[in-house]
Image (cartoon, rainbow, N blue to C red; front, side):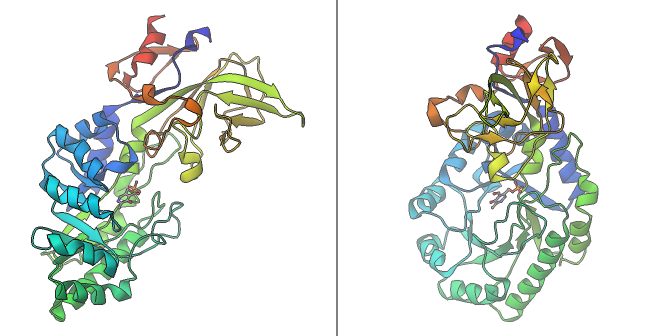
Length: 390
Ligand SMILES: Cc1ncc(COP(=O)(O)O)c(C=O)c1O
């Protein structure tokens, strides 16, 4: 147990897993160009792995575009997909060389006007997967029945709308909504062409591809079957795109965290405090309603766990308890896999607790945690290497 002191919290990255998931998704959607959404994990080694796989990227801001440029990603392999952009963000993104943008309302069209000869635009439509815990279509997306009207206004303004896009919600359990939305977009494209309003040459089916959060890989072949079925009905001239990210990022990272304190509270409950919480890598518990799997390394002489909490002073910083977690002692190590999506992306310095050291360095490692030989992802942070050196 003492071996663990000083090495946590740490995030471990497994580039092999990134590659494997990327290829599985690509094989499941052979006719679809995958634009990896940057936002779920800004860690550059993830991007580098994806760049080597030939990925294209979906950015939602100029800084996300700027983060991709040093990796040699050409701007024609990037799309900017934020439907409601600050004007300076749009201006910078165009200046950096990106030429594909998204709108979902009439006001946004006015922002596009100054750049209308240099860029093309996709219209984002709202479709909701009822089984996706993270719903986006309340915040973004025009109603499908308004699509042709928005496209006709765009035409009058001299703006080229050449694509339709949607995001059914993140962590969808089935691709039924992807299928229905894709077919609806095809109908809208047909209407727009018939009325001479727009020539839709691409449909972007967004993200929503799930992670399992159960230590088992997702069967993307099965998940994408409804989408592939719809694709057979799409006219040949329409190019297909998707913007996956959770599915790729989540299984690529593992968190190592440690019990830094425990206390029996007035109601006789045992509280255990970890060195990582919702302001660190575990914000997905709140934002995405995820109950991550956990592996616990304990000496078995602990107290029952009633409540698990993060290290900050905020009462919101409480963590779910997994079935593997019965009792704990001070210093025990908890390993949380599948925590690469929307985790370090939102980590902050609340309470002055630093999170930069989460950034993994990529040293190959074989390690022992709390005296137990474990199979962890093959690349680890320098802090974890300390553990193996002890
Ligand atoms: C426009 C857009 N595309 C893609 C994604 C990635 O979605 P997911 O992580 O569900 O694959 C998001 C997530 O917020 C998004 O807003």
